[in-house]
Image (cartoon, rainbow, N blue to C red; front, side):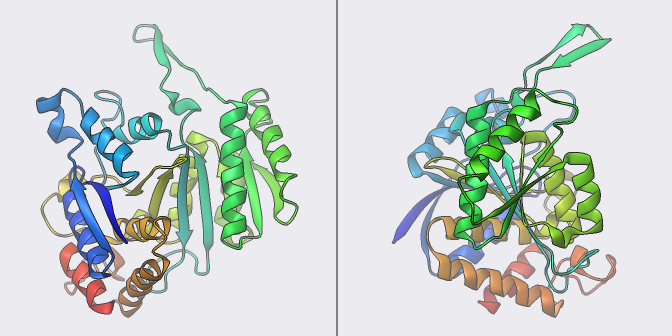
Length: 339
């Protein structure tokens, strides 16, 4: 089999970690033709948008894409490219595993969580406006039965396919009785169709506390859009941070994979940052393509390199100023050697 995959290098450190991922995936022997498409800050002047239509058309045609991080301005500027991609391609399910790695400095070991986040509605619908200029603003939170049902069903189907035992729906139904009430009631109805999987629910604030205290009690978490965004970063912190945490955006017949972390512009061009999150997003892509043997080999190689602790970037050392830390590409070289 050969595949054509849309590759969006991204902004800031994106091209560096994307290159590292590309070299590792190519080293597996899986035949991939990389169709490189540019999006983000660098293309605005040329196309008048950070997400040109031809980039979307490339993903629609290939059905699979992978991207480096893209800068999102805070409080001003263009709309998030990540949000726009998910909406335009109806990539309704955001999948973010949080798994402990031996050798990664982290508060816990033995954590194995999966966050399933609804990707297309909620507060990230971006329906907001000023009510009184400079004084008051309003955002509208959209929750629908359709979106709630399909994201909860995705979580249960994922649990069945991957041998998981429990799904927890996370919500704020005690306060947001109408919107989260609809989400929770829908989740309970879907859960009834999967008697082989244990189901429970948690209020969002209580869930965050319990994740910090007892993360091993959780398995698959399913959440609305903004809650899922926040909790997935919390779970990444449990296992060592965003540098090792991959992500996937999955629709009916299309998927785009990406690291969870940002574009870190201050490190651009320094060959310094950890490429593992992007490489492991490539692992998720291989699994999606059905190349499970190659995916397992890369995951094993990543674990080996991190466990040995020699050819790793500064953030994976016991001390961040350790002079033996290697660069982005050198860590990729070590992973390729471990394959």
